[in-house]
Length: 560
Image 1 (cartoon, rainbow, N blue to C red):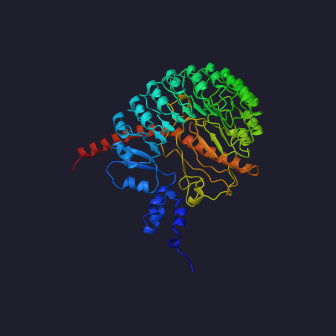
Image 2 (cartoon, rainbow, N blue to C red):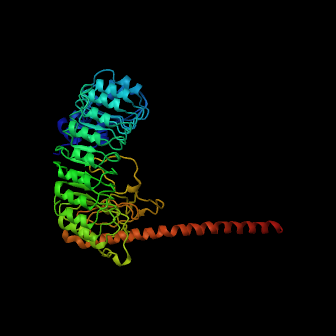
Image 3 (cartoon, rainbow, N blue to C red):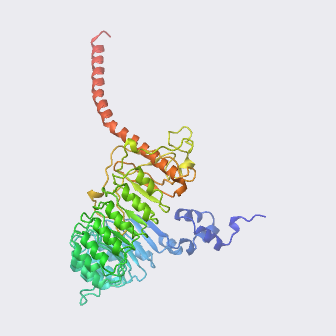
């Protein structure tokens, strides 16, 4: 006798429903009363964040959320008072208001009128009307806050940081991205340099100061003295930071991730300061620091050999610098050297020989590499992600195509297109994977996040959407090669490849690269000829129109 699923105990149903996504959990609750009761068990909704559009009154909304134990809320659009949310969610734990442009100091002031001890995380990113007045309310009534996101709140000043330093001593993570009115004085408040006015947020573990243009080396001095427990520091796009400031950071033993992307005044001397100190960094990003060169790699190998992630995009490094670094960096997992145009096959061979634990490498814009270097890189046993772009091969460097009988094309489809079941391995539509624009190899491996657009890191994008549809051949277990997860076109568009190849499958991986490159080159040639074709059509169209007019005129002048 078989037992139907409806006969299971509610506790077992709740365990099963816990594995469903949010939409399916709601659908399961509508099947019957037994499933509804099981689906409303708090264990089913543990950790779920409710995403709400507050457009009209709904008396049953918040009681329903509380019955399921949901304590994390994101407001996607706010057309009602924020106090409506706060009053409805008495035990709210996380409130995300990012992008609610119509939120004002007045609205936030009416919502926070008494202490809310349960709230631990508040996100006000891009709430551009928020000022220091709101931070005063937050510091007064949200004293248990641990995470505060203020990225893009461009009206925040040093006074607001003083209020935060006064009232939020439990704060662990603070994001001040693009708060461009902040200066060294405000960072001093956070670091407890003005104890007479505020204790400071001395328990901070993560601090994002990206694109805070007024900060100088004095801020780094305050941070090194007061925020000794800091683990992640993002200083990207802070043009006022120099090598001297890094000397202050070099003795922060707790620091694990440092982002110096596009800090134009950082040079080899600054990297020397970091390497000579007592840092134990696991992530470092110095991408687009024009003054960082091969000597920095020698310093990194000498004093920062514990790095797991290193980003050097667009730095002036060469194969010589790679040779100095890789012999000591055996634990490196991620290496980003996109747009390092002096890197050649020799550098890739050194990487493949010494960095056996590498799982991801970015070669976007490395125009001097060829098939030989890529063959060596694809032999790395742990490699999963390989990014290519702005890389063209000459006719003499073409890789051979895949064997004709290694793959089965979709019936009736174009060459290189495959059936839906095969294409699911690629994550695209039936037989095709869409090419999207790329950001030029930027990453946030060391706490980057969003930032102002950087022309040095952007790739070109040309052509229409139809021409950007690149057929991608199947690979992986059926083809005996690596798995292509996402493809983006060549010639200024990132080319992402998910690799999981074994050494015994190298021939198929070489064939894969050749097939994809051949497809991309054909696509590029078609784009190059399209302007001439359009110009020809533009010339012919007026001619045909004039011929029709002449014909109509001649017909009109004759007998009926």
